[in-house]
Amino acid sequence: MLRAEARQRLEIQRQQSQFLRNEVNNNREIEAHISIITRSSIRMRDDYNKLLKTVDELTSEVSKLLYKNKFHAEVCHEITVFLNVTQCNLGNGYQHYLGGSSPLCL
Image 1 (cartoon, one colour):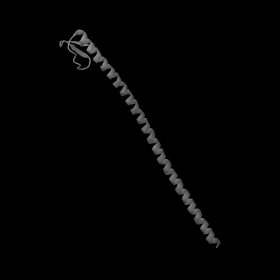
Image 2 (cartoon, helix red, strand yellow):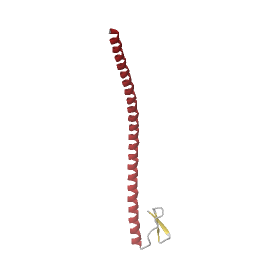
Image 3 (cartoon, rainbow, N blue to C red):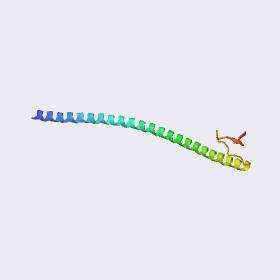
Image 4 (cartoon, rainbow, N blue to C red):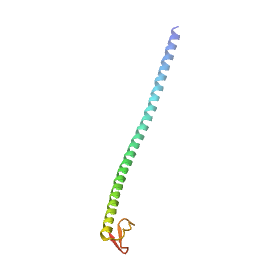
């Protein structure tokens, strides 16, 4: 009878040890996955911040170009009204042909 109880206790202890080993291994796997996900999220956040910076720079550049083109169109209109000539050919955005012959660069 004592041997049967001892065997039963040993079996329970073996099962508990096996359960503990399995849990430790599962925790290691989970920690490895968490580490991979953390590194990936850091990389994604860095990429996202770079993209935001690029978008901000491009937005600023577009704003400058829009302002420049608006200013260009206003100056062009003022020149044509003042000189009473046909409107300039925008071409490259800088050269104005007044009266069709002599270029005026702003």
